[in-house]
Structure formats: structure tokens, C-alpha cells
Length: 360
Length: 261
Image (cartoon, rainbow over all chains, first blue to last red; front, side, top):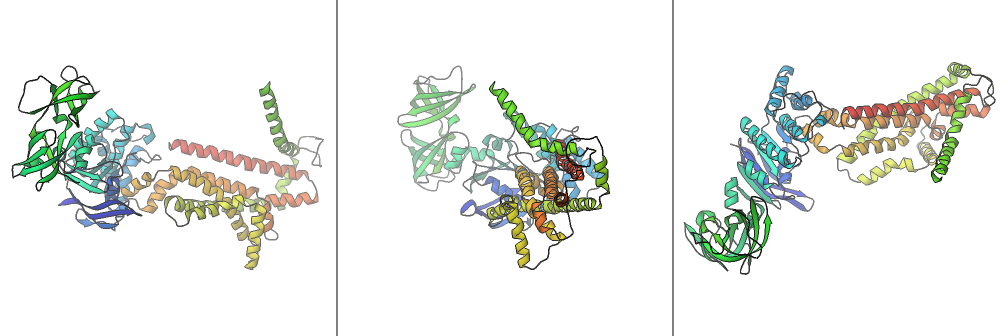
């Protein structure tokens, strides 16, 4: 059974439609991420699941129970905010115990639960302190402890890592994932950070302008984007106009101006339904830049030039030109990066490409 | 050179403002039976006499009861109004907000006469309740301004976190919003009390016959004679209305510091 289902959810604010006909199922015990740029409706969706805003249309169920008319304080949810929202006038232990007061838990049991929750987030010794005495990362752990100590049906995380600085964010990412695995609570995570989303999720829901663009496992979404938006939003992609000239169950044949004939595996082009206009998607890290005189291999080799180099330490991002076509490549640096203006050989493998139907 | 002039000028301004107050305090300890210079000796005589003056004691009691009631009523209304205006979408919110603040902008005499005429038109007699209502009307804006300012600064996610943890809206208000609002509520109460305790204009218009507050009692006494008792009373008033807010603010600041907000 799904932990949370949304059916034809619409949310309008005045004349603005923030979420448009959204349907999805969130599996029990899974870690589902709503990913998208700001204003795409991901936070609105989370707040509707939480009960902080009401959907204009559609149904929301949690554990099979329709919750549209159930107010937030009766939904049994754990909610973690970007700014932690720890009660500043209560100690850490009082903060964590807050939800237990409304749940018929005896005092002794509550103390034990609080102790275990603080152990789980690896801050067993801070119970008597006030939140302001803790660092940002510690506060976020306490906020997490407060949300999970009530054993919620669903844990909702609203950009919980975005207020932390970069190093801490990566530590907390691993920590959060560990805790979620340990207690197995169904989790819905909202972020605009694609690396967070890819690293943490069992399931990714990519949204844009209030519409779900794609739902799938992180790898599936990354390698086989369902739309041009997804291809552009996750990672760096080259998206080229093409024409589908032939297709069967194993492959899709594209004619790409300036490159030629490319046979894309059918599995990487599930949305192509017939011949005609299409798009070729080539990830920047799948386009290899080689010296112009390098020997041939199994890849298609095309002559190009380097227009600009963005040096990143272990890797470099190249802005390239292939005839009239601008391309980007992100490659590990072997010894030193290629120079601007250098003539190079561009290598790509058809099996690394994906194809999309053209939207024009 | 320039700074010396400015310093001297500032000092002169302070003297001009506070010297009369100092004179009143000084003369209240004068042993002479005339409430003026020269001082003939140091004495607490007028304070003792004050403590035995029934009219003044009655006025004190009235003022304190009135001030406390005003503080409680005004703060309760002010907190509720601020919550509605800040946390909920109310039709005509700006208009309501302006109307609630308006009594500060309208001259007190005008407000006093207006309320009196209004109640006359309704053929309602002057009463203590009316006096209380009047005081609430013009202390309310201060409470609302203070409480609203604080409420805007309390992020909604505290309340949302509380709700998500299972506290009902009322439990959330009592457990989270009100404690966070406490310094402002406290400050609002103090404002309301001192303003009510000090007020004379409105009170003169609204008070029913036979009821005197401390300011109206002083006013009445001044009409007969300048008794040294008035100096003593003035001193007590000064210490109350200056000292109370200072003590209050210190407490409020302490509260706020403890809670780390």
C-alpha cells in the first residue's frame, strides 16, 4: 500500500495555478524527493500533504485514509523546516518531547523516547541546552529528532539542508539517509539541489511550473530524461535537433544535422512514437574530447574546436564548436586541459545518447 | 569649540526639561507649610499627610484599579486584534488596522468629547465602565503597535511545527505563540497602565460624579490652593510612572534574553 497518494491535485492561488493536476504515489518506507526550480510547486505540494494548505481540487490520502478535511495536528506527520523552527523558549529535551505531550505517552516513556531520539541523531548530551546554544547542523539534527520521536506516518522535509554550509550539508545528507534507513519512515524530501536529490532518493519526482515532468529512480531520470526540461535541469546536456528516420523495438535511428546517423537504444528513447522531428540528448560528461590526432576507437569521432575552458580542478568544462553547433563537454583532466582555440576530436557513443520527441 | 557649544546647549535643554520636575521632588521634602521656596527644613511631613488624606487614597485606589483593568482589557484585545491582522487574511485589514491606530492621531480632547457626545446620543450615563472603555480606546493603539511588531518577527514555522507535532491551534497559541510574544505583551500592559494612570484630559470628560483619579484629584486640589501635599503626590506619581516602565523593561529584556530570541 502506498503511504501517500495524490490524485488529480490542483492548487490555485487567486489566478495563479501553483500545482496542476498532479497525481503520484509515494511508497511505504521509501525516500521520495520532489525536485525542481523555485516556484515549481514542490513546496506547495509538500504543504498540502502536511495540511498547511488545502488543495483546490483532488484528493490526498495518507495510509489509505483521505486527509483532505483532517487538520494538520491530527495527521501524525513529522515536519522539518529549512530554518529548523526549534522553539527558542524551550530546552532541546522539551523541544523533542513536545509532540509526545499530545500523544498519551507517560512521562517515563517520553523521557526514554527523547533519550533514544537524541542518541539516534548523535547528540545525546545536549538535552538541557537551549537551541540558540547549538550550531546550525546540531539544530537541524534536533529538529529531525523532534519530528521522528512521535513515530510519524510520513516524514516531510522542506529543504532541510539548504541553510547549512557546503561541507556540513554533505555530512548531513549522509546522516539523514542513515537515520531514514534505520527507522524506515516514509520520507518526502523537497529540494532544488539536484545532487542532493540524486544522492538521497529512492524515487525522484521532477517538477516544473506546477506539473510533474518525470517520476522515476534517480539513475533512470538521469540517463533517460522524459522531457527537455528534465534533461536540462539535471546535469549538463547537449540537446540537438534531429529527425527520426527509422525505429523498431531495439533502436531508434536519428539523423542529426552536422553529426550524421545515430542509432539510439530503444530503452533510452521510450517516448519516441514515430518518425519525424526529435531531439538528441547527449550528457556533457559522455562527450569525450580527444587530441585531434588520437587513434580511432569504437566511438563516433568528429573534428571540433575548443572555444572556452572552465577549469574545475579534477575536471574541466569545455565549450566546443562542431561546425555551427555549440556543444559542452565535462571531462576529467588527464594531465592538463585542452587549450582554447585548439583543434580536437570529439568522441561520442550512440549508446550513451538518449532521444526525446520534439516539442515544437 | 563647536562640540562644547552643542554639549552646553544639550545640557541647557535637559535642565529646562527636568528642572521643574526636580523642583517638585525637592519641595515635597520641604518642612514649610507653603509649597514654595525657601526651604525651611527637610521633612517627610507631606508624605505622611498624604497617607492620611482619604480623598487622595481613594483616588489612588481608583487610578490603580482603572489602570490595571485598562492594562488587562487593552492587552487582551490588542493581542487578539494583532493575531487576526498579522496571521489571518481579514477583509479590509488595512482599514481596520488604521482605525485601531487612529486614536493616537486624533487629539485627545476631540476623542473625549466625541465619545461623550456619542454616549449622550445613546442616552447612556457616565459610569466607571465608560471611563474604562475610554481608557481602553486610547491605550489600545500602543498595545497593538508593540504586539504587532513582535508578532511579525515570530516566524510562522514555529506555529506550523507545533501544529505538525499534534498541538491544536489553541494549544499552539498557549505553548508557542504566547510565550514568544510575552515580552511584547508585558510591554503593552505597562504602556497601557502608565498611560491610563497618567491620563487627565479624557478622564475629566468621562469620569462619573464623585469618582476621582490621582491626576483629576491633583487638578481639583490645585484649584483651591497650592498645598505642599501636591508636591509630595507629584513625587509619588513621578516615581511610579517613570520607575514602573523601567523596571518592566528590565524584566522584559531579561525574559527575552533567557529565551534566546
